[in-house]
Amino acid sequence: MKKIYYLFVLLIYSALFSISAEAQVVTKFATMFGGSGYDLSLQSEVKDGYSYLLYYTTSPNVPVTNGSSLKGSGDYVYMKLDSATQDIIYASYLGSDGDESSSISYSPLMKIVGNHIYISLVMDGANAPTTDGSSFLGDLSDYFIKINATTGVPVYASFITGGNGSIYQDFIVEGNSIYIVGAVLGSDIIYPTTDGSSYPDGSLTNSKTYFKKINNTNYSTEVFTLKDLFNGENFDEFLAQNKIYKSGNNIYSVINMVCDPLDTLVTIPCKGSVDVLVYKINASTGQFN
Image 1 (cartoon, one colour):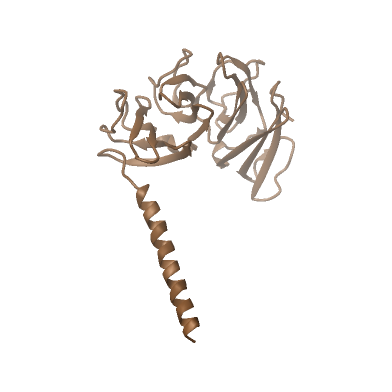
Image 2: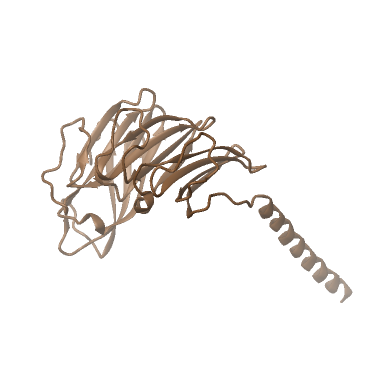
């Protein structure tokens, strides 16, 4: 009986010690960042002993390290921290003269690949930093930026589309190529495509999917094409969930979508009220299969 009692006490002690040790680890990595306004975390990643953060803020006093400032009523912030000491390595505002609060629902993405930070998001105004001469085209514009992960300095930044932005968007960085897939409304203004594809009209109910391939050295556009996957499909009926994967020379895109009985897919009818759509894109030519 004593052995059972001692074993029970030992188990309780071990459990408490484990919880205490875990709590201590959590405490070591808990800290507060932001400013005097509203701050909303969007993306985070830990790599090689550093923490990378992307968040939205209305704060004019975020502790930036490069002299940047809040441009509109709300901007993005990207930040690098030492994971051991929580010291700020660098921090910078990233935004336009609009209010990015209307853009954060468009699923901003941040990925650390090699020694660079890649971010795709939507801007709601002009004067966001660009390196290729592209500019804000109105309303919500898709935006892509590559940042040196050591220094925090942008290497490449560009507006991709203009108009009503992309309700779903994902990208892959592999080798010397950046692959971006998104969708825009028929009323959107878009930069010239490489194959001459364009919108058939300015209808707000006619969305198109775009595929863009960028050279990751000189940042030239190698492929930029539009595809009409849906016929009269209301843009707002898509759930904001898109993932792309690369296998061989193909990009596979997976979308969750809400099917409306009044709307039909161009080639495949809806199976139920909510369906999963998978389509394939040739990574070299941009041809949809």
